[in-house]
Amino acid sequence: MKHRTILFVCTGNTCRSPMAEAAMRVELKKKKIRWYRVQSAGLKTENGHPMSANAMQALSEAKVKFAPDFTSKILTKEMVEEAYMVICMTENQRAALKDFPNVTSFYALCGREIPDPFGQGIDVYRVTLRTIRECMPLVVRLVCPPLEE
Image (cartoon, rainbow, N blue to C red; front, side, top):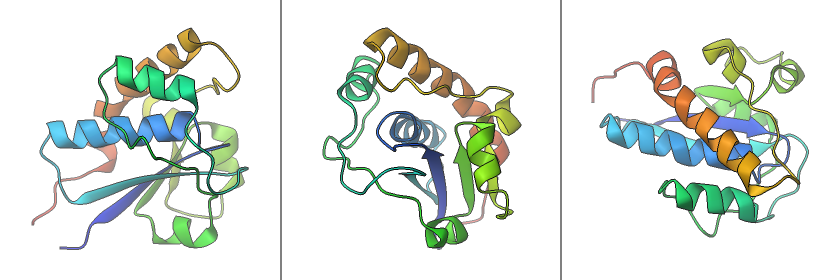
């Protein structure tokens, strides 16, 4: 069976979307759902930037596994078109991708936006990760219907 891709999108792909990518993988594993691939990308970034140190620290403290060699990817039209679902951190990001029918946001799914912690202290990153993780069970329920393997 072909895996469906869920793509998380933020601005720089160094904080929120990599944290959401890691949190989604944990949630899918917990629910024994194996037919989705999870990726992330940024609207305004360049390829190759490392994940922010505070994002890695917040993930490590929460014992959420992530790829230590993660690097940012710029969002392309092809990535959006090939994804099963694209989940933006904010409504403004969703609006930037309004021409694609497979784009939604944390707000549309969970009633919560995920504010950008970039440049702020570790406590803000911890809160950001906690918000993402609190939303993840609902995101999985709404976005990942059971499939026959």
